Image (cartoon, rainbow over the protein chains, first blue to last red):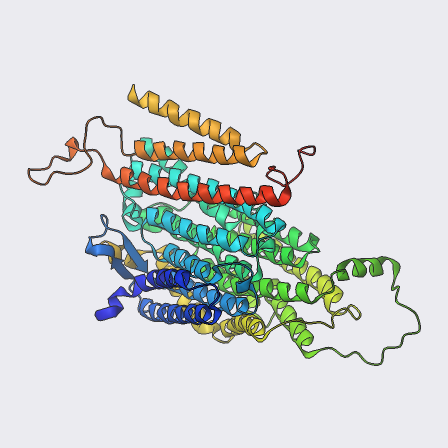
Length: 520
Length: 116
């Protein structure tokens, strides 16, 4: 590697930073300029993410030493397969949010594009960093940007929900800091690879303190991941956030899951000499509880945006419970499911906003009343055929596709993800009771999604004459179709993607190349 | 003696912060968060071990004995943590002012004083 290619791991962090700063100085009135610069930044980011993915697929993690300092002393960025893939996912979501926001949302408040790039910078940094304290800093960057995005558009409900969101995340950050500093106090390093070496060497007397530190860190990540019972802030703040922001927030929970997956396996996995038993049961139990909570929420809610938020929670629960199995096969399937569910939830958040906007303001109340009392329309009005506007039909089809994806039905990638997950779980040498609970809950949550989705879908799309004013612009259609198209790519390229993910999962569970790359 | 003093300081700050964090008024929550973040900052600082009269910057002109120096890393970490928590508190204060303006109450759930 030579020239600019050796700087590849830092480009996904620096690029959004530069563009966020540039966007800040462009006047709010010059929308065309702002949008062009923002689009250019996102396309460059996508290109660099693809380049990173291609290089990381060679099998050797790309290690970037900032300032040229050797590893345990300097800060490193590590672009391995998983990190590269997550960066790509983030930039795809960023592009979709951009397309969607250009139709109307970037005018709802100042500096939307700047915040979008700042958020992407934080997310990419969190995926790529190889240093624990840097992870904290990138978490703060992405959180600060997400506060701005959650508040974008203002309004009472949004401000109230954001207030809770900010407070909860500030407390989580404090827990994160306590965990990080305790770990530093015990081991004397913050480099993740070096920690993997140092953790088993901690004196037996200090072990409880180290485990407490790891548990505190885990708490901080799991709050971000929206685990039950620390997720009650999530449905409200994600449902009230403006649609493009909510679509981006789908990846924020995945940042928490990514951190758990990476650090847990580095510190307590096979490479560190541990048996990986620390916290495993907790992950499984809490994951199952989260999955159940999400499924109940999906089943119980009448609000479409909350429906999307609860689907997000149940997908996070599925992922955490699967990660808790700590097997390469299960992790591979979980990563595939992560990609599928993130795209699906993201598309749903966008779709929901368009649908809600197109409906008459009293449509909900009318639908409920009609369910109870029957139609109160004047009798004798004969409808000859129903004319469905093309856009409304398109929305309906996109809604169905989203639901199939989230419920895990063919032909969408959610099905492949769930099937692979079930297959891997049943293929384990020991199929314990928790596995059976997970299998049952996976099925039931799929069923809950189908029932709830058909109930909501019937009420929205088949209700009489309320839907004649579909206001959707080309950019919004493109954003939704883009995300769903990516989901179809996941299906069509399932074989190759699975191979990639398996290699990624293997190097996660046995991070030999990671350690050798960082600490030569 | 040093250790007891600093441990007590962290404990009192964290305890008071946690109690205030659980109160229903946004102002109390902000003060609680500030106290908690101060407790955490002291905690980070103490993770570099407590030393009196030891500089964190190595003098390169003579042979270095690390035992003579304080650990500089937690001091750098605490500086970062202070800056970040300061910025976040400022942001939170703005948000709670807006919430106060929109909801007409300073209850964290936006409910009136009679319901609280």
